[in-house]
View 1 (tube, rainbow, N blue to C red):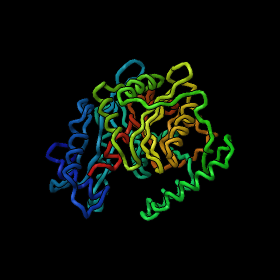
View 2 (tube, one colour):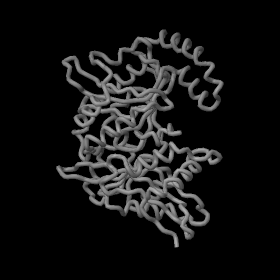
View 3 (tube, rainbow, N blue to C red):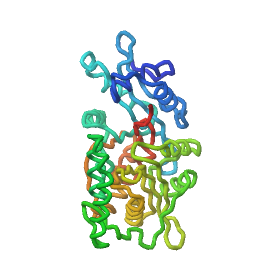
View 4 (cartoon, one colour):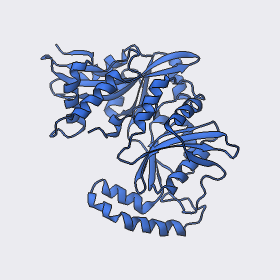
Length: 371
């Protein structure tokens, strides 16, 4: 009979091979770097000691044919602790021989000791399985957003992602954008781009902040939410260090936003070099200042030559993004499963903090920059 059991250290070589075949190039063997990262990420990293375990599916012959990754996230709600499990990679090989292996893996994962379970990358098939197991989709957490800053550069980057030779057009695109943005009025925000003279920061000031400084701000600026993460200092430092690694989009940029008085009203982190499409990992704000923080983010990235920004929504940011010529699309669903209906209600009302650093996208595994 087939078996589902916790991931063990001895499973890592087989897991790395499956990950390479399912999510990467099946013609290339899995690297030692990938295997080492999977071992640390799912077995040894801070936060993996709270009783949340990844699961493997073994067929009748004892061969690994499925996997569901789990990372632990300590949270707090109404003054009490919660254990959350982030559902990462869900993969199955040999579906024809066992078409229900994926459903059994997910059911076993949701039956774990955690108080609530999340995924922010559920496909239509995965989301459907979550719903059948009494999970809920969170529409306000499930949209990806895009803000074009330099249109010629943006479309050149889109082309380069498919045809590498399109990168040769970058100098031409840069000059075209300089001319176009220079002709736009300072207040002429368009879907296609942002004026060169736009003063998005107003009287606020955006400045770089250290990784340690951002860690402190993260704890302070998420205090408004319930439920919210309750990272240990070690785990939060680990998560932010991972997020600080360079990604395909470019270097990590950590910033804080201050009012004229010097009071911090928000912070953000994105990955993006000049001429590239930046990926926003996290936007944080005190209540009522979301629009200013978003404007400062866009203005700061524009000054650094980023051609566009994209990221994931959160309910507190969604309304503030309206009127900013930001477009939205649905690529994957954020889903939740919890035993306590009060927890579910809090997330349905947009009062819970999830996505970004309290999710999956902070890891180098999700970013795809592990050799």
